[in-house]
Length: 530
Image (tube, rainbow, N blue to C red; front, side, top):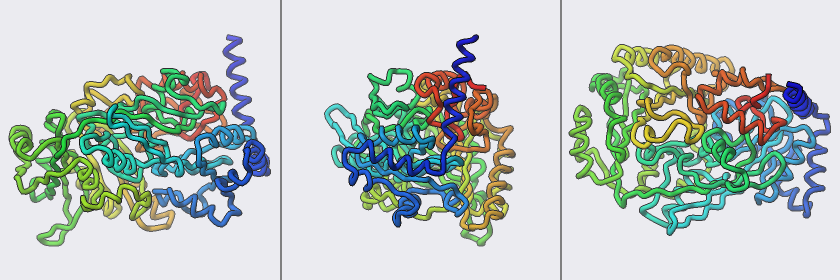
C-alpha cells in the first residue's frame, strides 16, 4: 500500500508541475530547441511563433472544422513543423522540460480540435512535412509516414500496382497518423477490416524521446496504438501496413430514394441484410434532407452507395438474391479500377486522380458529430421519428451515415486491438450537422439539435455501454479533469470507445508514460489515478 501511495503521489507531483508554466515558457522552449540542434538555422526554419508572419497560415492550413478558428480558440505558443523524424525527440524533451503540452497534428481532422487546441500552454507538433511513402509490391507492404494523408497513400499504391489497395477511409485529406491509430474504416472494411487491423509495424517517439519500432516498443504498446489513439502514448512517426488484394475491376453504384420512393421501407429492410452480404459487397446509406424534384417541397433522401469487389455480372444476381427490394439495374452500375473507385467515393470525376494529392479540403465548415452502434434493427416508427427531426430548421445540412458491419468485422475478436466494435453490431452511425453561420448563438443551436437527435436515438442503439467510435471524437460523452486524470471518471467515456479494452489501455499508459505527459481531454488515463 505504501508503494502504491508513493507511486500515486509522485505521479501527481510530476504531472501537476508540468502545468506550472512561466510566462517565459515558450522562450525557454525555443532556447532549449536551439541548444539541442546541431544547426540553428535548420531549427529556425521549422519553428513558428505568433510573431512570425506565417504563424496563422500554418496554424489554419490543416484545420478542418471552423468551430476552432475563432479569436477565442486557444492558440499554440509555438508550432513546430519538423522535416525529419530525428527532430521530434527534441520537441518532446523541450516541451517536458518547460511545462508545455504537445498536440500532434497529422491531417487536422480531429472532430473536437484536440490535435491543435488546448486549454493549457501548448506546442503544436505539425507532421505535415513527414509524408514519405514507400510501397513494396513484392511483399504487399508499405511504410507511410504519419503526416501523409490517406489520399496520398492510395495514390502511391496505385502508382505501383493496380491490384493492391488498403482498407481506410474515403476522405482523402485525412491524415494517417490519427486515422489509423483510432481504427480507420472505409468501403472495403467488410472484406479486410479496419486500417488498424492491417498495421504490421510502426515507428514512434516515446515520452523519453526514444524512437521505437514494434520490436523495441513491445507488443503491449504496439497493441495500444492500433485503435487506442496514438496521442495518448507518444508521437506516431510512421506505419508499416499490409496491403490487400483488389481485383482489376470493381463495381460501384449510387441510388437515391426519397420518402415517396419507399425510402423508409428500404432503409428498414437494409438493416436486416446489409451485414449478411457477401464480404466483397458493401452498401452504405447516407440520410439527408433534400427538396423534392416533383413539387419543390422538403423530403428525406436515402442514398445507397456501394462498392463491390468484382464485376457487374457477378453483382447483379447477388443483389437479386440478397436485396431485390432496391431494384438494382445494370444501368445503375459502373465498372472501374479500385483507385478510380477511391476517387469516385470522394465525389470527384474518376479521371481526377490527382485530387488525392491535394491536402486542401474544399468547403470547410462548422460542424459537430457523434457516433452510435446499432445491434437491433430500428423500427419503421423509429426511423420516421428521425425523419421528423431532419425536417427541423437546424437540419438543413445534417447527415447520417450508416455503415454496415458483418463480414471480416465480425470475425476479429473484440480484444485483438483496442477497437472493440465487432460481432453483434449490425452497423455504425455517424451523426453530423454542419453550418455556415459564425455567431456563437447559431453554433449552439446546431449543437443543441444534434444533441437532441442523439437523445432521441437512445432506445435504438447499443447500451451498457452506449458505444462510440474514437475517430468521431465527441467530448459530450465525457472529458478528463485538468491537472489529474481520474481513471474512474475517464472510464465514463473510455468504456464507450473501448469497452473491456479500456483497462488494458490504462495499464499500458501507466507503464510507458507514468507522468501522464501525453495528456488531452480524452487521453487514456493512468490506471492508478484518483
